[in-house]
Image (cartoon, rainbow, N blue to C red; front, side):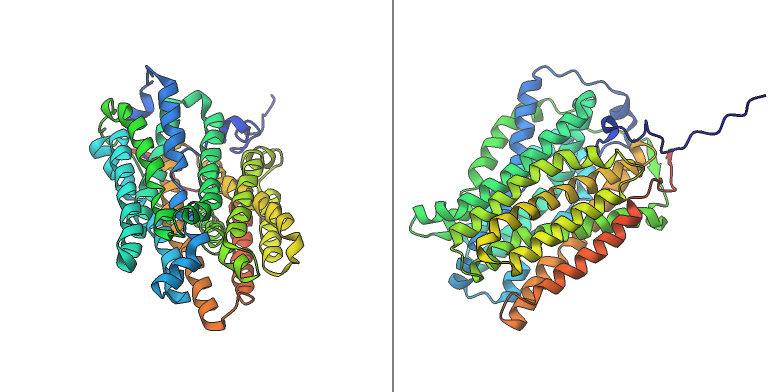
Length: 429
């Protein structure tokens, strides 16, 4: 009699690139969503709408940093207050992410996306037109809007393009990076074109938000509507591996939002003009496209993702320290290294959510945990940079922040990168 060894739960088939679907459906606990096969009348219009919406998920964050010095000088903000300004939107990403499934089940994902796009546009108007109070209130509204859409949009992609999830992951990632890069590089020139008005430079980004809303309108008219919850996942908050995935997601995001919020200010402090600093940030973000698309595929070639996490975190820390301490004539090289690292850390963080989950229901709940808690944790990084700069008066000391967050992310990533599943399962209710 031949005894066949049991197949490993993380076999080679499980780790094939086609299974890397970090586009988690916030409605994945809905049995009707899981079993329905959507018929798309105009898939090209949906694709265009998805791209335009994704393009709007980063400009509210990356447009502020090149103008942060001008805004602070104009309104008399201290370093700590400016740090709070860069922290609030990131904090809202985490705090408001849990609202997305609730709103989607009540009104339908497509309708919520449309409504929140208009809310995002309103937040951008408030941020740029109502002085100091409006600056903070608008940042909160914009961050909350991005946090909700950031959960809803991937779910729509996974539901409506189930056989092209890998390709659509790349499209989604490219749109995110492109939106961030365009805003980082063009906000200062835009403000210069209107008598150095930082308000116009920040307020301009209402235009792409409204365009996206108009293109998205047909999807809202044919929304799938609400569904009955059919599955429940328990015990995720007690699972160590789930926490390692969440901590890695949050810590690498903290470094990313420090770059979004503070890198131009650091570079201006080192002697670059605001335009040069914005273009350097824009170039670094554009480079992220390379590693964001390639890192998940390369990481699945081995037995687990630990080596990949080490490589991308080393590139990220090297790029950060190079931009902070390296010679000025080598800044573009360090910006490229930083972009390659951060594109990989982000895409691997998304991939780990799927690779550590046994089914789509667990993945949906792990995604909510990683985004909700992770982004809340990430907001502490930009705030700490502002406080340290306010206390010391220069940028040299923030290298310690990079180091502490980076090492912690590596430790969490080495745990999350092991070829294991979170020890929870979904149950029908």
